[in-house]
Length: 240
Image 1 (cartoon, rainbow, N blue to C red):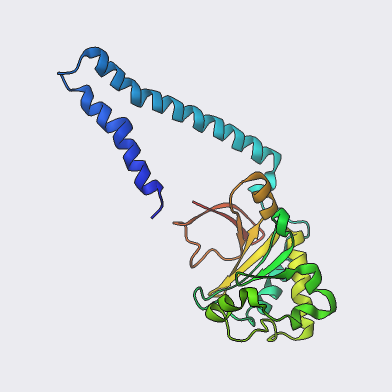
Image 2: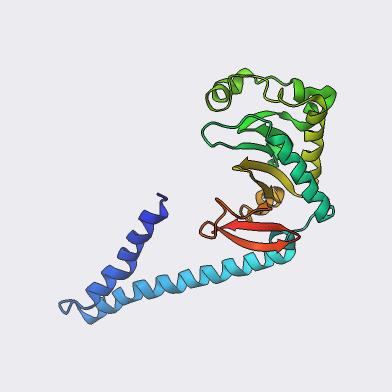
């Protein structure tokens, strides 16, 4: 349970309920009762002003970066779709995390770890190194992530040995291609693949997480996500 579930009711009690209850206490002076009434009124005014200012800032941000709430790819949508289908087929051959039943990768966008490739929540190496001399196919899990890997993924320390050399090279090319189209992280679970969308913008401008998927069934129900945009068979989702 989040802190908001606890703090919210406490604030309501302190700011609204208690002052309003004491307002009808005839033993208190009118001046004191008026002061009590000012507490919820003042809080409401301040809260409203903050919301209006925040909405104005958000509106300006989305005007400056319309791609935050619109599906905008560098390449043609059909080509991006084909690449997603191809990378899903490759990821289906890779080991899943046993605690989540999913396969995932992330191409980091943080300044201090830009282009670091993580697989199943374990940082592997910079993608530029992994694409040299077929390093991805030959990569062995190091000591720094070995314990987590063997506990939650596999006892085998060569995570990509289920792929052929050609598939390994193709995997990296697809990752780079999708990253060029603002899709820098993928998660495959229950045959549904989803992508982080515009993570660079999320990190630099704090716009919140965006998700792109071809399928909104299963976990991505309307109770959890709102569809911000829909086009060419793609869905842009934000968490409610």
